Amino acid sequence: MIPNPNQHRPTKEYFLELRGRINASTNWIASNTGISRRRLDYLAVGHRDGGKPVVMSYPEQFVIEALAEHAERIPGKKFVRST
Image (cartoon, rainbow, N blue to C red):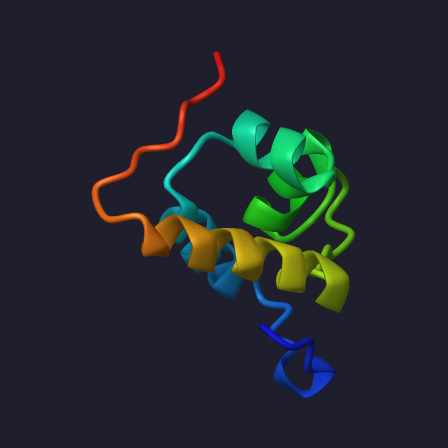
């Protein structure tokens, strides 16, 4: 993958699509990307407490896309879910 900010899709829907492609818990994604669990939760709902909008930055999108791409390369692989 080569970074290309012109492909930035900061929407909640795209984040949820990527998270679904990874097929792992939020805790697992947080521990393997360096993005906090709280931040991932905010991205999933699209806003913080109080209604302030939250959108995915391009660096966040890139690292989550890379993880999703990696997950899809391993047929039948289920990532270990954190408890």
